[in-house]
Structures are given as C-alpha cells and as structure tokens.
Image (cartoon, rainbow, N blue to C red; front, side, top):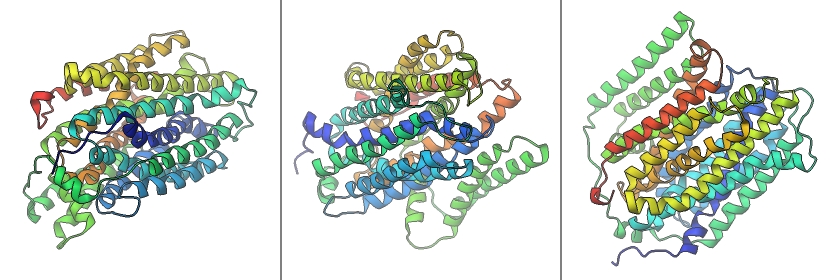
Amino acid sequence: MKAKPELTFWQIWNMCFGFLGIQFGFALQNANVSRIFQTLGASMEDIPVLWVAAPLTGLLVQPIIGYLSDRTWTGLGRRRPYFLIGAVLSSLALFAFPNVPTLWIAAGMLWVLDASINISMEPFRAFVGDQLPPAQRPSGFAMQSFFIGVGSVAASSLPWVLEQFGVANTAPAGQIPDTVRYAFYAGGVALVSAIGWTVFRTREYPPEAIAAWDRAPPTPRRDGSAQRVRGVASVLLLSGLVLAAWVALAGLDKALYILAGVLAGFGLAFLVRGFLRGDSAFSRILDDMRDMPATMAQLAVVQFFSWFALFAMWIYTTAAVTEVHFGSSDPQSAAYNAGANWVGVLFAAYNGFAALAAIAIPRMVKIWGLRATHLVNATLGGVGLLSMQWIADPDWLLLSMLGVGFAWASILSLPYAMLSDSVPAAKMGTYMGIFNFFIVIPQLVAASLLGFLLKSLLGGHPIHALSIGGISLIVAGLCVLRVRLPNDANS
C-alpha cells in the first residue's frame, strides 16, 4: 500500500476545528471555577482539594474512552462518535454550572463538566495520529494548539467583555455574577457548534488502512508475571497507606490524602490485575501501561513538571493577582472582582500568544528539532511565571503571559508529536489515554502539596505558588533533552 497521504491545510483545519469548542469549555472552567468556589464560600486552603475533581475525572475517563475508540467503527467512524457525545454532555453542563446553589454541588458539577469534555477531547489526540503521516503530525498538533489558543482567548476574556457592555460583574454574597453566568451559556453554544463542524466536515480512514500504514516500532513486552505485578502493586499500596497514616497521626494538611489515595489506587489496580485471568479492558489498559514505549516513559517526566506548573497557575493566579496587584482578597469587593476579570484577560492573552506560537512552532521544529524547541518554549514559560512576583503594574503581567503562551502551545503539541511516532496505530487511542495519566497525576500531586506548602512554608501568599510553577516549567524543559525518539536523526 502507498504511504499515508498528506492532507491539505484546510483538511487539517477542519479536523482540528473542534478543539476551538473544547478549549472554550476548558478556558471558562480554568479562569472562573476558583472564582465560583470562593463566591460560594470556599477558603483558599480548600480550593486545591475542590479542584481535584477535574484531573481525577480525566484519570478515569480518558484511558477508557481511548480504549473504546480504538475498537469502535460506526457510520461516523471510530473517533467522531465520541466527539459528538461529549459535546452534547459538555454543553448541558456549561449551562448548568453557573446556576449551582451551593459549594458541594459546584464541586460535583466540576466532575460532570470535566468528564464530558474529556469524552470529546481524548479521541481528538488520537485523531491526528490516525489521519496524518508522521511528517505532518507536528503541524496537526500545532493546529490544535492554535484553536486552543483562539478558543481560550474568547472564553477567558468573555466576562470582562460582557462587563464593558454593562453586564453586572458583582452579585450578592453566594451568587454568581451575570458576567460569568452568560459567559458559560455562550460557551455551551460554542462548544457543541465547533465540535459539530469537525464531526460533519471530516472523514476517517478504516481500521485496516490505518494498520497497513503503521510504521511505529513494536512496544516492548516487559515482565508481566503475576508475582512481579503483585510485588510492584504491594509497594504502591503500602506507600499510600503509610502516607495516609502519617497525615492522620501528624495532623498534616488533609489535602495530602489525595496523594496517598493516588498511590494506593494504582497499587490496588495493579494488585487486582495480578490476580486476574483472561482478557478484559481493565487488564489490557494496565498491561499497555506496563509495556509503554521508552519514549513515552521519558516524556512522562516532562509532562509531570509541565502540568504541575500549569495546575499551580490555574488555581492560584486569581488569588495571587487580586491580592498582590489589586490589593483585595474579599470576593465581594469591587477590587477583587476587577482583579478576577483582569486574570481572565491575562488568561486570554497567554492563549492568544499560544495561537501565534502555534503558527511558529512547525518552523521552529524544522530548524531546531522537537526537543530543543520544547526546551526553549518551556523555559520562556518558566521565566514568565517567575516574573509575576516582581512585576508591580498589572498591565505588565501581559509580558509574563507571552512566555507562558509559548510554553502552553508547546506543551499542547510537541509531546504528542513525539509520542504519536512511538506507539502502534492499533493502540493510538489507548496510549493517548494512558498518556493522560502523566497530565493528571502531577495535578493531583499539586492539589495535595500546594495548599500544604502555601500554608506551612510560603506564608499563605499564593504568588509563591506561581514561582514554584515557574521553576517546574524550566525543569520540564531540561528533562526533554533525555527523551529518545524512534527517528532520532530528525528529532
């Protein structure tokens, strides 16, 4: 069979356009959920724990959806049915979220929203691997980054824009301002419309064609003996239980139970796998995780430090900017809400810069290669976050967001380009879902540790959490240098 054909610019445009809607939903969530939680009475120490719903949902949903989409074939193909189902559910959740009456319902709604968006998002990553030959994959993932940037600019700035048109930006205690409420309604419409465009304007190759074009090296078969699996599982489970006991006995921050739960949860999963016989989705996902390619394991370290930094930025930027640059920590004050709206503008700015960076990244890759390009971009992001503690004028924070934008565009594209060349086509969805573990786990670690560090070591000032995030991004850039790719001459 001939090599997989290259797609035109507009074909790539259509297949990635749905990410405009996906990121519209995510950007509304990232820029406004902390604000909603604080409005409904959450303390600063509670916010990381409340946010844990988002990454934990992805941890559970994405591998399952990836595994199922690898084995699906319908009149709409194998990835597009999941795009459509997730879009409808996400749109309904966006309409419901700003009307929640209490904090615990808001936390539950975050689970629903994040699960629904993940149903659509996970197959989009595998979609690029399915449709594009290796030489075009950096451009395909960069196109996704472009739409992520454009969608996020619109969504993040929407409350601020609505305020300029006279929509109320404050509300009585315990109520969500109309600027946020109407922004979520608009997000629901944008999300389902953009994903619908991709669903009905693209087509998919049949599984036999994708298999014939597959050039990825075979995945290694590591020691899968029941005894070894149970040994590793026991270590993880015991570590989680010991950490939980230490937190309880020493009276440490309860958020650390999240980290203990992650360790124990993976230990329990592998322990169950060690006793299972026969074939099942649960067994296959865990076996594929055990047998992941070396490139994927090396990228896992890069992802850990990258997403730890991003999670710190998402949950603490509102608190940091309102306190340091606008002088208020009271969610009912005009100064706080002005600062919160400015954070929306900042988030829009870094996503706008990311859209521009996405245009430049394919060219950067041709000149410098995948790894050096990611190192440069991650370092720019780290410097951007670190600079926020020294900048006094909130307008100049836009310069910080320039660096963050380059890092964001790179994080959303280059690790996936490296990964897609290293995994078999028949398991593209599964491995993209498993790769999400290395996005979710650092966010769970951040949710566990940042509140504890903020209260115990950082004087309760959220600006220091952003500095930790900046250092973490620089470390992520350095770690990419040790990633080995199948075709290293072109990396």
